[in-house]
Length: 134
Image (cartoon, rainbow, N blue to C red):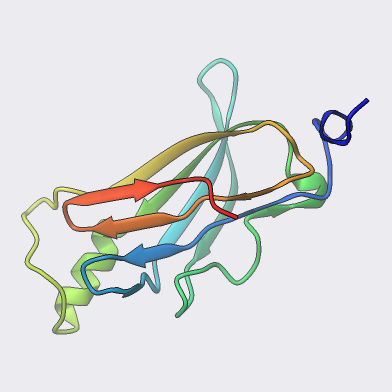
């Protein structure tokens, strides 16, 4: 049996994220990040909530060890509030009202709980992208 298969239900893996503001060319600091586990029949369970630090990262993994299990998840990033705060602080770009992007959800799956899953978000007021990082 492969190590990945042995860790498929539980393991020592972790889930991390970070945000880069491509408009400013710097980390997205102070962004609220919510993690929900998605059920098989449309339900969801909140499993973590954090804010990004000055480096655009959460201070700790969103899930780690036995808390990281195989399944479907959704990360939601409050980017509208982040860009509004930048404007209020005298920086950033003008937003439409309501903003084009307010909350950015990213749905993904964990297939091996023994691995590190890193889900970064690159944002601007009008676009975003993501990928599975390391």
